[in-house]
Amino acid sequence: MRLPIIAAIVFAELISLAFLFSYHAEWEGGRLRSFLLMDEAMISMNYARSLAEGCGLVWYCGAEKVEGITNLGWTLYMTLWHGLGIPSAYAALPILLTGLLTLGVHIWASAKAAFLLQGSRAATFTAWGMALLPLTWVWHGAGIEAGSLATLLTLLFLELILETPSMLRIALWTGLGVFIRMDFALWIGAFLLSSLLIRRTLQIPKVMGFTALSVIAACTAFRWIYYDAWLPNTYFLRVSEVPTLCRIVNGAMASAFFVIYNLPLIVLGLWGLGKAVGYRIHIIAWIAVTFIYNIYAGGDLEEVSFSSSRFLFLGITPLFILASEVGSQMNSFAQVGLLLLIAHGVPLYPATIGARWRALLGPVRQFLWNGYWDEQARPFFFGVKPTRLEGIVPKGSVVAVGFAGTHPYFNRDYRWIDFFGKNDTQIAHTGHVLYCGAMPYMIYFPGHTRWGWEKLLKEADAILDVLGMINNKRICYEGRDWNLPRCGGWRIFDSLRQRCATKTAYVPNRELFPFPNTAIANQVCSLFTPSPVPGLWVRKVKAVREGR
View 1 (tube, helix red, strand yellow):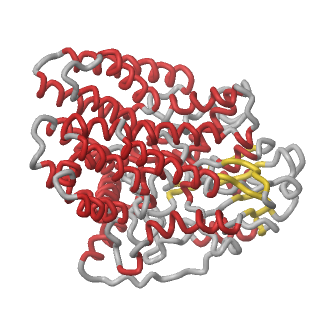
View 2 (cartoon, rainbow, N blue to C red):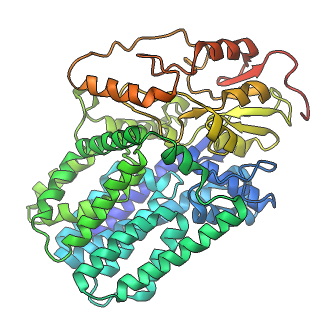
């Protein structure tokens, strides 16, 4: 391994370590209290902890059998660490350290592929490009499986471009990826077809196809036997129950924002695509499946600012390999300029110049200099600070929660309602559809379109982290108009929102309205009152009972 590539990996690892101890660590009075993952990863941690404690693969001990995860293999990997007896407060640490490992392997494998295809200068360009790009640090360090899947795809691609690939490694990378997350099979299918076109032989396609189908069959059989369902509950919330038009438009918008913000990388990649020859089919298949799947799954506009969608991150390696085709032909000064431009991205408006770096590194700098930082500066995918319920809500109480990962993981003596329905089939199928847009530019919020108001109002002793609250102080929303212009492209968005809203009690120009209708808003406000802890609302009269 050449020194510049080692330097790039070391740089990325140091940045990730800074993230680990500033963003992912919960500090209290100078003492390290716990480690946190992205809240969705913490949902998987709940399932892992429950399994390790002998309660089964469920959200929390005593919860119904609902597959509120989409990453079976990753969850079982988390279970391994819980089974070793690591205290729950620090159980996220080995997952974060795994992210450091996959980060290094991902950069190395990408640089190796660029070296085999274009030479040492391309390898250096690719390694430093990935090391400097913020979304590389984010998705390897969020605790979610995206970093591992991107690494496995890169390792698989590395085998496919070898003159004599190893069938054992191809089977291993294929099987691991599909086991970690079943939709990894879509990329396997793309590589299967591209390999068939390039090599004109069935050897590699047969190995990938047989391995992927075997793992899919095993996971599906387990799902059917254990959960009595063919697909995870989250698939229902994210895909099958969301109007197709809304899902596709939302995914297309998320993809467009990714392209715009990462325009320097995209332009160089397209330029390099015209130069690439031997591996072009693999690259096109890889990138095409990545964008098509992001559009099909609805993307996630919450993730496009400086981190970019986790689905689109799976296609970052081929973009850098293509870009290195061009960058490696330039002199050193031009290469440095291009790398910095790619790392910065194109701001969407003048006020965001440098926003990607300020948002990510500003809190790190504040933490290193002062030893503390404002919790409000923590983006949601770095972890939600857990609210401690002891002394406020009696043990055994029923608590409705929005962030269904972190709070239930650190508060195990309560019963929980996931009012988004990820871990509750009743809410998932009968809950009220909340809104079609969490923000003016969003068509819907993937996986969060339903709130279980009826169950919440009837059963909950407390409500934690209602997303529609204003400044964490008031749950009743008095109304606000966005005053969006009724001209040009906004007409399209208005029309799409109205179509998406056919099943909802949609209120025009009030996308942040947190309730389906004012009657429910008034009912919630009449039943619950804010506690001393921000974000926690407790039922007013005799509802919170010890051991309920």
